[in-house]
Image (cartoon, rainbow over all chains, first blue to last red):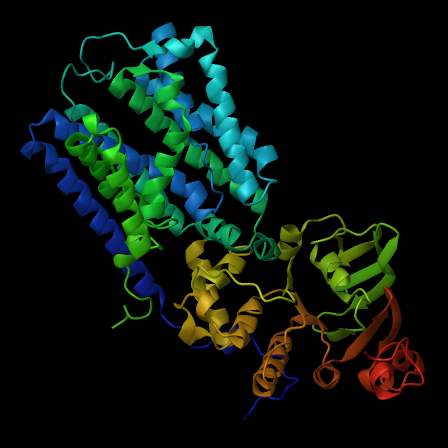
Length: 346
Length: 246
């Protein structure tokens, strides 16, 4: 019997045959997690076969930029608020960790967390006025604020001003986060940091914030009409992104044991955080790590093989390679990994 | 429980000296299907924005299910069950069709897994289940319109959803509107095509210059001289109406 138009249909009856699409989704999620775990294990075994300090240094920097770009990707890739001032948060982490250690003798482990929290708070304070700006205007504001902060620190004697701060030598230990000449412990720390930022992104992808951030990126007005609180979404993304960026900043300070505004707060650093994600695939789970794995070694190798006396030949080659990748894969290298949606289902 | 779902009382919105919506009062019962018509510039879109919370009124009150929602912003109204579509179709093009629906479902179901399940159900209902995993940007105009109504609100505001559709697509659209209404969802629709809106709705509200000109059953309205003069007359006879069509 066909139901008449006026019959109030029970809601459950209409949706009788909801597809079991959830299982394909769960399979994909599990696959991502297993792949990441395998990569993590393989990466953890890397130092066993390497005894070159030069290569270890490249590995540490690669992982650090993977972590940084993954953090940047949270705000800029998922939530769509392009920041080119993330060096500010990196600098906050570096300076907080270093000043706490040098001035108050507080171990770096505490500094990492304190720097992260401070950066998150600063991100919220800056987001409050700046997230009223849209698109390019927001991006310009982030550049300007980061530059101002850098100049302020440059003229702040207590924080070392232009002279910077040297981290004094300490007896090697995990507590002091100093290991003599060995780079291996740094490698494992930054590997863990990169893994944590990846895990955070993976968890975000299937959380309310993940859906909301992407909606905000695509169309804020439509998002708002669907119940997304746009402003709060941006604030949450900014705080999380700033936190991880600052932890990496604190790590970097300890790793190189010397910081000044030029090395931890300059604009180029902000660009270098964005580049791996843009190259690898902005707003994708694998993009930042993939981009960093290609771009950082590329930058280091061009510098050491054709840099030096050439006065910038390395940068020309590096820039050309980046352009080739962008031209061939404008949507990012991660798109090479992705199967066509729908084609995956057997 | 009150028999009124939505109640507007004296709702006015001024832009500078112009009152785009002027002292508008009407009520909607749960499950009612009402058309909102009027010539260009009558204030239909402004009224939609006021009900959805994209604009706040200069004066007057809006009540939804007995609660005063006049000062609530759009997301809070959405959470209470008011959903709207846009004149220019909107979708989250970098996300899959399913994910588009999940965004809306999350306003009421906090758990992503439950929201996904709900989204599958809704997609089934609007006949988009087969495209669930496709990027929303790949959808045709007609399917994007279906995506826009893929929600489960208490009140659905449809802003010219039939615009740009072929006759057969529009017919499927009408069927969908009827199906939505059958689920007990109240609908307020702005539509320019009289042939579509008049047979469909229980009741129509005619706006002109920001004010409610008339309200009632469609068949009575089309004979109302005031309505003909303000709106329908522009097409049907040249003796009434504000200006000849250009």
